[in-house]
Image (tube, rainbow, N blue to C red):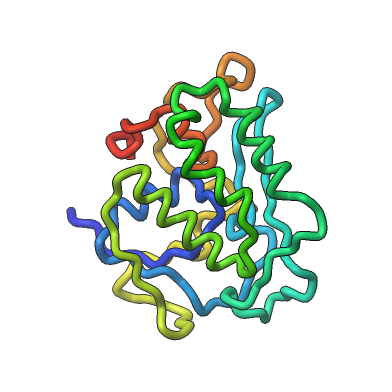
Length: 203
């Protein structure tokens, strides 16, 4: 059965499930660019694997980014040095992984340069991730907000921080697996830093 296309939001360092859907539904993938910004989602949060289990990395947004703010208008806050803490988190968690050094120079600029808008930041991160994984996809964007897309799989609210996303996931080696066991659906960086060029085959 050929999978029909999909509409997906833009996430910060999206989880593995996001990329399995994106890869299965390409080239008919639409990125939602006109939704109202929902709080406490993967749009500004990613989960990575630390020695103590799941570590959440959150990109802070400027206060006033309420439910009725268009996602493209949400600004990143730099009131504290979150880029430094995220980069230290990635280094601490993945310096021992097989491929962190291989991809390090691609990721580093995202923790040095300041982006104004969350949407632009996530978009450029996604472009870099697609290139690193070797998924060939020309990103297309929604032109207006539509409540439903009858001809597409709608994953805008499906892959959520608030509920476990139930999908079949084969275990792969994780750095702290001997302490934590295998943790499902972490950020794609967990898969990429541990599996490197094999990531595309895994997906």
